[in-house]
Image (cartoon, rainbow, N blue to C red; front, side):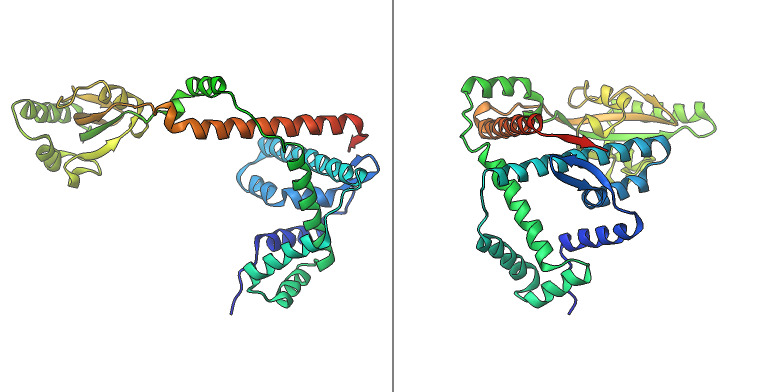
Length: 314
């Protein structure tokens, strides 16, 4: 039976392949520790590959430089955290690491530890190396958590301030229920213009907009009698949206000339944009502020570590 290869194994494979292509070297020095190019490649492999597939020329060069610099700085921070852990003589009990590995084996390999080990070996990884990687992940997570462990108290005034500043984020977009008739201009513009003028006149005289849309409209909604359903401003191009969203319910638009077609619009119903009350979004705002404050505290802590360290990028 085939087995799904976990994401971490795919990452290992990418690293192993690239390691054979490029000689290793020093990317940075953090106090007495060295960060190598292979570590940088391990971190950025998929992201840089995606950039090379979608970008070219100077844009690609700039993007690759940005990706690599960010990766090096992330690795520098990681190394500083590991050094701080060792400096304080902290320790991760071995059984905690084994528990994590056992969970991985159980959830992704159906409890087959031998299959797990063989998969690692096939990708050029040893169990000891994987254990080291997992240990360092746990150290970094624990150290980051420790330095933001104090509860973040968010004053009510701050919640109200963020709510007022971000009202658009908590406001449902204005919508209209729209029908449309589109007539392509063709080679004889005057004739086609006359055709849509006749259609509009019939609607004004009482003909059903949907009936005429089904007979004459030349867009993809003809079979739906010109029905676009409920739409927001982003659904239409700027000129059509500007007209449609200023119309009253039951109103037929003037003839709108856009690019290669003439349009008639008919608004069947409207939903005004409604801002959610603070009471319904307070928890979401508090969570957002709390996360931002924790990230700020982590960055301040890392700045202190950087300030005390010898760091050199190559």
